[in-house]
Image 1 (cartoon, rainbow, N blue to C red):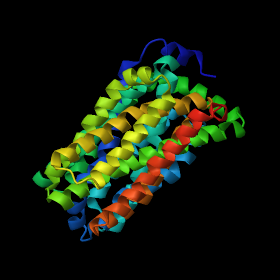
Image 2: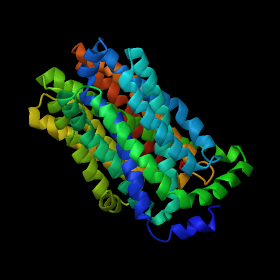
Image 3: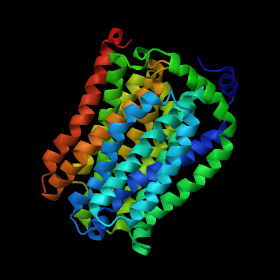
Length: 402
């Protein structure tokens, strides 16, 4: 049960806290996605190849995938405000220390550490939003917070490319470190009142059944479907920077600015999802439509012999499908989860997302570098097709969706 204090907080949207959460996930989005425009400079900095430098992305995704469900389970047994503050501080430290990494192996190890910190921040933030906001307003609140991630995705590659060209490869990491440190101090002040509220609520979770914390099979199917199509969409976005470099020979700054078109689509999806969802009636239909758009976008970006403007449109479409589908699929998961496993369920969704990123980014970049675009597309399309198949099954067999 949510405490009476938390229920009182749900009567109106806590805009200050939602804004804080939005800025927090902004820096996570910047640090995760800025590498899409930085692979060649990072390869040069560590004296390696682009495909090996891509392990900096995979290492982050792998650690996120492994640690997220573990952290998600224990997050209801630990004060989530305290857990969030510690993870933000650790995230800041990680981004500062990576600047001094002597080798690529050290840098990958530090990115692994950063992935663990992110595995705490993202699901805990969304779990706190679901507690602070009434259920009938959660989709809008989730969309508002996701604007932070959207902004990080939109400006991260361009910002990283600009700072790399004007300063050096380490400058974007310094930006993320200083910003996260500032958020840590601000959050410590803003969230101090909620500390005791969530402390009482989280302590009651220790008395709950372990089995009640395990998501049931229909929920696991939704988690897998979301992770599959969303993970492939994010992987395609990250790969898009390398595609631009191979096809057009753009610099990191130019690549970052062009890839930021993805963020425009993503933001548009976040803003318009309420209207789209009302028009399509069911959340399942909305997510299914967005998964189809994701599949089309992957084809446009990897295979279609389009002019440069067509490539731009592919990035916008890809961003729109993820910006619209992500908050709705998150609400779907929260609706099916119980009070004792919602954070774990969100963590598992993030895990599946990063599993697909971890597996397919290095493989796809290697194939693209070798000129094997068709195989790369077929591999990437599998994630979207898996998600589509599960969502269609849930629509056709609603009795299996309880």
